[in-house]
Length: 178
Image 1 (tube, one colour):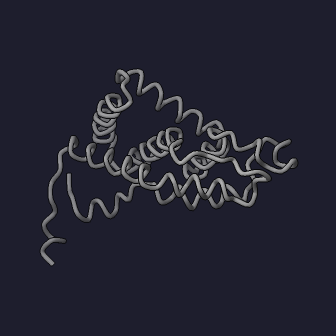
Image 2 (cartoon, helix red, strand yellow):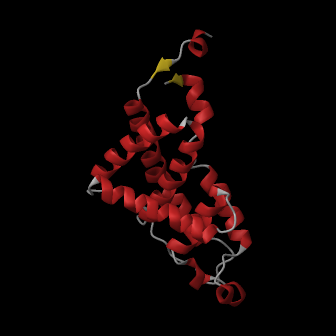
């Protein structure tokens, strides 16, 4: 009972660490299932045969998507501080300098916006980005292949998968405060 009344206060640095570690843990543990779901999806004429170890693109898409939700969760100043810490920490993980890593993330954000236009739904955009980054068009039936557009049934299933990788800020704030 008292655990809901007494919330642990976290610094921006601690929030950034928790955020990064949780995303990496989810991607590392869950991508083999995601690859399997894509490989077995009935919309593909031939299976894409995505390796269970090919989580790089997926991980970046998940990071970018979660960063977009970060901006709507915090006030602008705090979001900028946490994002700056995340960029600093992730640049070390990806063995890049901070500016180079931030540029990579901004390019992914731009890519997701472009493939998702005119929609503003980030979940849908992330699903479309997965489709394009893993070059899944070549495995579709002729109709969708010619259109160069993902089968909506695949996107719907991928939206459900991607939702599981979005950070739950409501649950986080029930346990912690900043």
